[in-house]
Length: 312
Image (cartoon, rainbow, N blue to C red; front, side, top):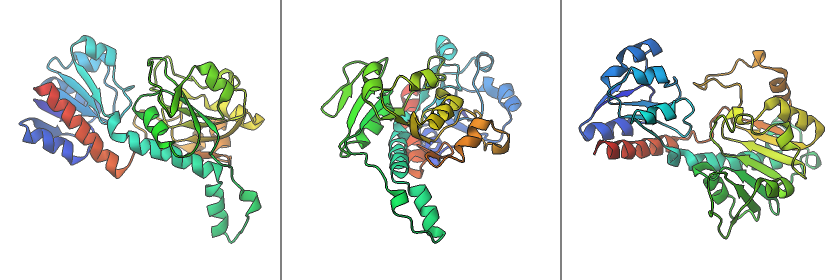
């Protein structure tokens, strides 16, 4: 097969495919126009987040057998239309689930123990102990929405912390075990003190976490979002941070991100974002959950295996 690489990836991916006899064109610098003008030459394309693969793109690629996304999210691919044309759409959430789960845990522990603020204060010569007294994860109830690769990896990492784990997944059943409880949203609303979101971005999950959703919780809650920014309404989050209904948040993703995850012009972002960056009970990171040296190689290995299975 002749395969177009639109975004850079770990060399393991193209080297593995080339060893198997496939041709890999590493045209990372191509513009969208160049991609559109040449996509008809390829049997497969490998992307990350540089562009969207739309119906128009697919119609220009009659030879296409697969679209491979080096990562987890598939929102930049018109999957339904591609599959209707017999094109396989593959991704590699198995490759970065461990990295994402570890960051979600790390962000939560940093928030609970005031580590960002305390680190800054000590560096400034301030020794404030009582003002940085933390809270324990032990004994808390954690609600997880979405039990795919990411949600299940996060649940696995919670073992040993002495927490109760309630999991809701609209599309899965009978996945409970000795450590997690398969739950309804109503049970999570009633019992959870921490909410972690692990859903893809779809029409159904766009702004899933909004003011109405947040205020269904019986307790004040902490929110973790390492999924997609637009799954959470930032203005509604800020409203509930101000009221105290949300005690704190860990956000690796923001609804203001572009498809290519480029740097944000923070000075031009709305008031809600300006509040977040001043808020000591909010931890922010630039969409790096799942973005480790190890995960880059793991993603390449997973994709290589899936592509080779298609070519057999």
